[in-house]
Image 1 (spheres, chains in turn red, purple):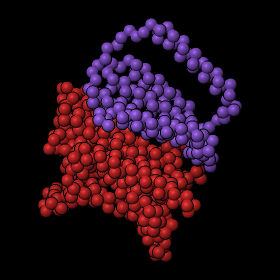
Image 2 (spheres, one colour):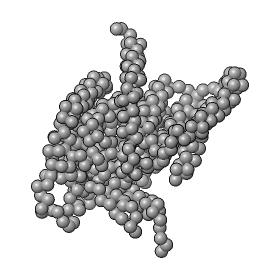
Image 3 (cartoon, chains in turn green, cyan):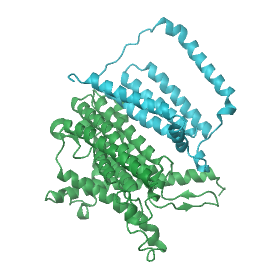
Image 4 (cartoon, chains in turn brown, green):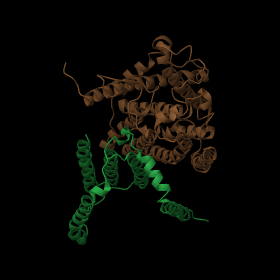
Length: 358
Length: 168
């Protein structure tokens, strides 16, 4: 075997990391769908899927096969290139932002004595948070174009609603994160996580950082951003059939479906990183003596990260089972007249507090 | 690496800009403009200006162009007819553009030493992050223009509200 130079090793390791993360994310997406159906079923006093495999665990596989084998209908009146492009943009943007998420503490791997490669993050970018926001804002095109290119009034109305909703709530979303950025003094997700790692739960931004207001604004704006209940007006089935993906079938529909759940996972990741200390344990250094060596020490950060994300996904499902849908003017009024001013007050208060203490 | 990025995305930007002019449907033109802006963002990034690249994507591609597309969708604008264009544009356009290009190239090449150089991934070598530099300049030497601009934008927002509301 010939010796690879640094750039080639970097390229190979990066591709390997991307493939691993992609496989895990897509599996997580499939099982989030199952989790939602199961939990929603139990909350409504029914079983949820239980026939395929033990406890219905093979249901995602069956759904996948069904969607793959379905006929891919192409309605006659659609704008063909954009109609095909839209689900690709939606799913692509939903998956890209995972690239800057650090899944564990920085673990460098040295190959042939070269520079280290981070094991638990695909790309450590110094403006990671802005990358996530930017990719999210590009994702709107998927929804906007799908509705327009379908040439169907329900699709068009669905995508108009979705676009207006997403660009309105993006402001509140961005502003709610400024408090965290001010506290950490950096836009790198790694630095933000490290700034919360000192005293376990008490140094997390939501508790010790007093960013609880910012967190709730982020949570509500993120629900609107991912078009989830109670802000799921773009797909309100009583008014708009299925909203922007009315005309889509087979794998193209599946791509929108996967994009929605991948976006939920991204939102859960960002919330975990910014407000709940990322992969840090909630107990600080209390149990350091017990778990300081061996396999458990290596796996523990991943466990906490996945646990926190699972809690967020359960919260998503719980909210969907509990709250009714907003009316459209209420939705807009809530975003512009309540969330935005509160987010600004939060920034002002955080900045003043930091200036007073620092 | 940097040269490869420059060639690929430079060509993408030019192709997007030409496509913008030749397309008949407004939504295709708007999407070509998105391609141009994204390519420019990659070029900024390859020059080591990460913050500018991210701002370009968030502000222009993510907000301004989404509004364009939204308006085109809302008004359901149809296919446009290409007119022959004005005579003056044909006569003065290409020489004018060439003159501007030549002037800019001259100025930048002349002052190359004063402007300094930068490269991709400069922040990895423990240089001061350009985020820090931008904010430092913005809040010290450029504070007055910065605040004046923000007040100007506030006035524009108020103007839009006044124009949009029928009874006030």
